[in-house]
Image (cartoon, rainbow over all chains, first blue to last red; front, side, top):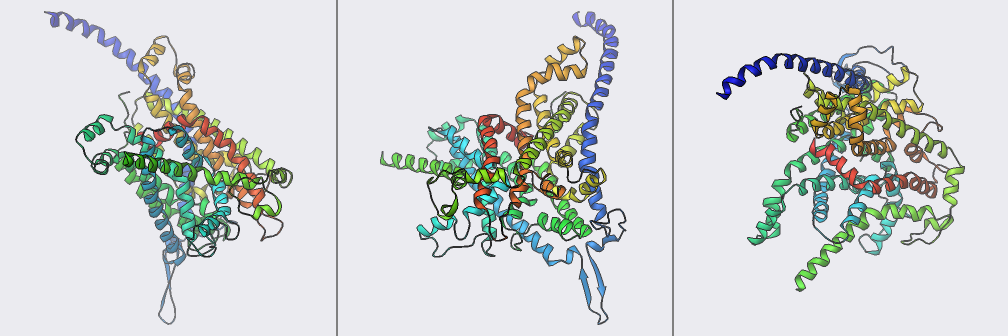
Length: 329
Length: 276
């Protein structure tokens, strides 16, 4: 009875409502387009176009003083060969450049070691902050300090602390009998990478810890109550319960940091200038672009780094399962 | 009993370790900046001297005041620009359904992952073509690449969570989208605006690669570049005292801001990283 009587009413009302809605919708979409335009334009000018130009330059013979007159040279910045009269083939280009592969190795080494250590230390700090104790606020404030300090400033602060003659690190380690002579941390080929790692871990572990902490806080507390009642050892609880539950947040944080570590420039440029042991892809690319006036060659190196990072970004979006569609609006 | 005592002691030792390790380098920079003369080269764990010499030297010698002004201008305008573009864009991205929205969001997210070096060559050309080389405008322009995607992303997530009823009520009252953004959403959004604005400010304040590449004279440099290039009378004499004083000057405002807004910053960081 009721369905019969309401059905026609809906049918008559639905028509005008639908047109009003769609009018509203089209005007909303039109407004949305206008609102998006400035941002899309800004990103196109500042990111899209420059990226395309960088890739273009990598296929030319452009130099700093001659950007407009650049000529297309194909892949020769990446790889080219000349056959000598003796029949020997001489390879050149970025892909045959030992300095480039050294930078790749430095970058990968730096990224992997720093991210692994930051994850472990960050996890410890996050677990500490997730526990309830007196002075938790102070600890949380304290770990934000390294994060807030500009990278250049932390590089300078640490290069003073790591100074070979007057540095406090050498002083502490001598007093604790950990070393028997003063070490030139940043200048020494064996320790330059260690110095960079120390500073980077100090600076970015807070970020890692906070991201992991956010994940930890989403785990319901009653799970832990249950494990406590069952008398399960805390270490087992950590590996069987905490770690699997915090894994999504952890994965995103790790890949986020990995992307950041792979493009590192400022810390290495300031802390260990001109050290072949620490030069990363970004450092060597900028060196060629600006300092050595091998603009096209540097562009090729930038492009390769971009491709590598694009690969990891795809991995990030895939692993992070980012909710792009959002709600139902 | 002894065991729980030992455990608690170990825990607090760990806590103290974390705090000391975090704060010590900055503390050491501060006490170094107040030392002058030969005492600079003595390792001290506690403040031994209180001299303003280094601070005077920073402000009287070189172009540090100008660099500081440049940093403030660049960071402030970068934030203003990013927020202006991001608020309107975030409204469209979070509130209006249209085709290609997911793709657009994906593009914005990937731009925020861009290595700066990948656009350096192209941006260098753009900046030179527009005549922005060696100006603060060139920096403000180029900083959009990392502030805008981030602010759009965080504000979109935030706006998505605002109840739709508010907006519907405004539409019924005849408000157009611009009025909805400025009169309805803005008052609700100020916490998110403060957070993203602050994070963008810090990012712009700390940026080094673009600032190093797109400026070439002392008067247009920002503070990080000025500090990195600060040199002494001779090539082999590094003026550690002045470097530390300059470092403290640029860091103290940031540390104060971060400590005041720590809760907001933590939520902003996690919104950008985890929530997605």
